[in-house]
Image (cartoon, rainbow, N blue to C red; front, side, top):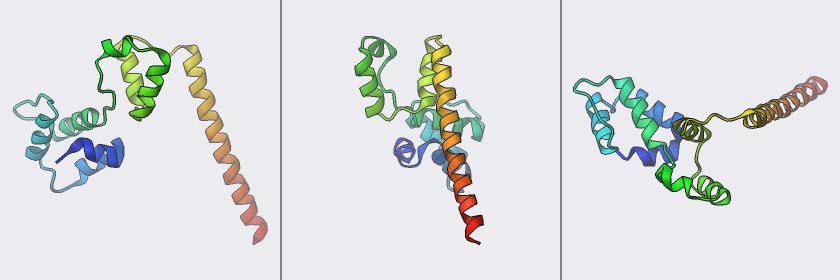
Length: 136
């Protein structure tokens, strides 16, 4: 089983659901998949631990060492992250690995993005609901 290909097709949550729900994914198969991804496996691994590690490793899009990333310019990094479709969680994990936390500006941008998206979605829901109520 190619967990990286499945992750590319299904995304992290889809891969997790597939591994957790499939009757074909025994602990032995999960162990084989984990080993193929160079994940160290204990003698008696827990199924959920295997799934968690497989999802974490298989969905990882940053394939360059941190030292290489540190040599890149801002625009190069942006192109690299976009070309590899790096997920926000992986970017946050990278920052944590470097003992960096998004500062006030990053947090503010995230808050504004979430507020804008919720507000826009809410507006469409209200318009749709109001429009349906008037057409009845």
